[in-house]
Length: 556
Image 1 (cartoon, rainbow, N blue to C red):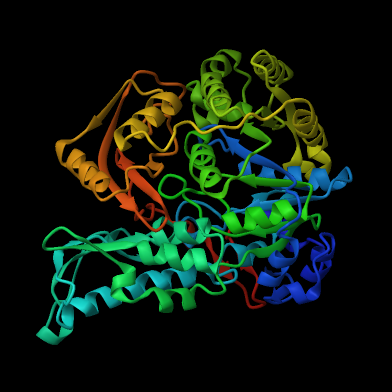
Image 2 (image 1 turned 180 degrees about the horizontal axis):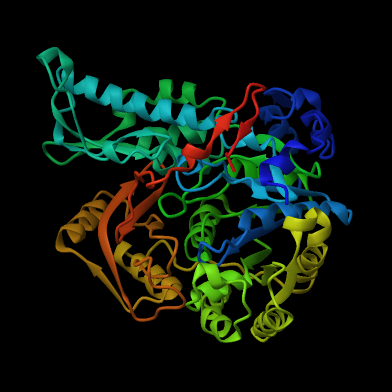
């Protein structure tokens, strides 16, 4: 069996200009990054912006397990299948972060014969978007500290600085640091922190900004600190917006690459739905909708995280209306939720499947809360028994969901034709009555409680007194009408990652709440979620190498 990277390396890639021609994009509307990568120009958007939108399909999944679900693989395979049956389709994915690539897993390129390529590039520096975000973030940090050093005209309280530095790498020792040690000329000594780049507010801003004007306005609203009197200080007041925008000038433009079957793919924006909103950028998604009849996009982690944020935050801000949701699961993952150990998942176990399918059931119910029709697909494994597949099919159809088996990992687009046909039939026969889970006029606490109880299944939301004070401060500053971006572990519906299946009535612990005024949402941190992950005992980086011919091994 060939590895994903071996399959990717054997791909018959077309020049990106040829791929773009499928969507009637001209060579002048591309800025090339080598043969197989390009950024779309502003001129393209100006030409197509008044076209009607195509259909928008969101791919999400059950809670991730070590058994694997294959959400990105399904997204890519569905796009290829649409192409194969003669539909004008495009894929809209988020970019992978270097942190997980070198830490816990490979990147976000799909797998088997349903991948986007060039995979090596995508999982490393790609077109430099994340490097630009890192630079813009740290420029603001440098200018903030310099302002304090040079007289502190804005009367900033060094103990109330909320802007953190960032780096696109998991590095736990940077979570809590001290800066400004040494002589007086070396800066004001204070406690500081690093977060991973994809958890930064600038990452979210880049993803949610419509254009450069919107980007600059959002950057200007970033709260970096508070004065001794408790007044917020913004990036605009630090006079950093122009320079940050210059660093992000190219990063804001969507990237185009291709799948193994040469289906166009726009890969742009940030991951980590447990910290940020975890979706493809608004600009890329809107462009895709103008270019194709079907746009296939995905949101990070399970539907309790990525899909909820896509529907409640991204769709609200960008005025998007999804036509269908594809919910991805595997028999193996469902049995894992039913208590089967990873090493025993290949054995038929209907009892465990019945016990674990409640996780899928909850996600089906959650999608229904937004009024969007749902198609459930199973990534089929050779170890799946006919009885297991039949049980899941019957279970889904009994709940009003279309169901399709997917073999895209093994067969590429050919293996996704059944799914593509079910998606098209759903869009044509079931109307999407999309609506948000909550309205903006609810209080921050009410929004948190709505998400926790309706989406997660919590019985109680525990907010510490100090956090309640933070919420009151945020609301007093006029940010109470913003949507809430919940930061929760991805492995469980609860804030305890060890509780699988469908827990009910559990407490959710809110340990921090802060406003991302530029992004336009309030972040609520639950449980033990960290904005700077660490590397595991055996990092993926240990298995990565490059040979004398420049070929990378071990990346995926």
